[in-house]
Amino acid sequence: KPRIGVLAVQGDVREHLAALTALGADAVTVRRPAEVEAIDALVIPGGESTVMDKLVRAFELREPLLRRLADGMPAYGSCAGMIMLADRIADGRPDQQTLGGLDITVRRNAFGRQVDSFEQDLDYAWSTPGNTGTVHAVFIRAPWVEEAGPDVQVLARVSEGQAAGRIVAVRQGNLMATSFHPEVGADRRIHAEFVSIVREHRLQQSGARQSPERE
Ligand code: GLN
Image (tube, rainbow, N blue to C red):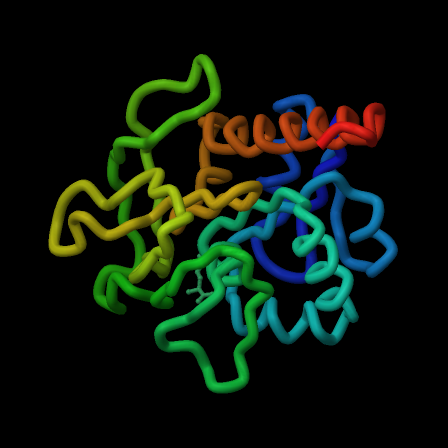
């Protein structure tokens, strides 16, 4: 079973734990530096990225998380979690830091204050066998991806309205992020996409361990 941590300093942690457990992962909370070392992958939940950033630093999680991410640990961020995984924030607070890893610029609260939250059916670039169809996306004071680098795979865009075409789901290597909240509701397909990335990564790692002489 892959052990998947959910960053549990702030935000909607429980919903992610439930989704991951339902998919057969060993889902655990991450609040302490030692817990960062004991996971195969990380989910960063929605919440408030400025607060999450402060708490990550206060709990001395920043350095261990940066180290694991640099080592290639898979991570998935939803909403505030997407912001945490972004290399750049278009309108961040001057003191706001992200963990980074995704070559994207995000804009916080991009859909405007008058549309605090909304829902939309989106086309999604699925990669897990069995995952098909549109995804019903729930956006809550969500960011969008304003710019994405050449190595970033766009998985979904806003389908209608003024923001149509805006990027709201991406993947780059072992990192995945969505502007919306798949942990709300009973659809587990987005989490299944991430669990597939985690399983693939674990297979590659054990292959590399068993045959270190191979490239
Ligand atoms: N607006 C929040 C932020 O900037 C994200 C909202 C969310 O995670 N639902 O961190």
